[in-house]
Length: 252
Image (cartoon, rainbow, N blue to C red; front, side, top):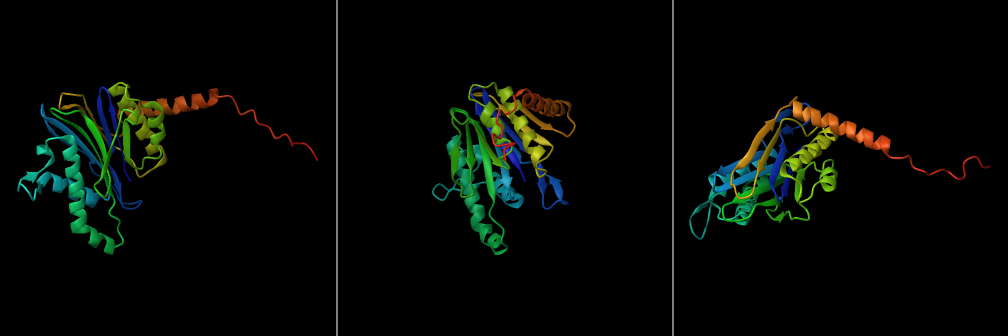
């Protein structure tokens, strides 16, 4: 399984992805799921993937090599897309291209065409944006009302984001909250695991402010996990017990 989250706040973009890939309980590997495309000063693009590893790798390879525009004859990649919207469209086109070439063979083996992406960043001259792209190649965009998106095993970490993230949160606080969301997911699902890849980009810089891999045992993340567990226990202990009683107890 996989868990990736993207958070877009006023001060910038946060992208977080785990690296665990498993085909059964005894076949666990590490693969990068957060891919960064950048030309400093011109564009910073981050693409996080979830789903069938062979499919996601095929889509990313297709995007890297480029797709030929039938009308212009030009090779279209993420690095020459003029806008974030058109870049998201190219990802959708790459997904449909891979589905057209591999989908039938996968279905003949009862394998679902399972793939989704988070795509965020900024191209010079346009605003910073964050999209979630579906297996059909269509996509939605996060807004100031809903500044975070998740793919993969998102049900455990989503409540943390829903409660704590707003558009006006500091971008490094957004990273902290995203890491708590990741910890909550790892705590409940062994299919999501270390190392974690993270990226932060700030508006109108068109480059990454932070690119880092959090390895198992890294002191900050270990401390964050311990503090969050302790805070939850303390909060639970400080909440009064429910006042409800069985009014029929003790009666014949």
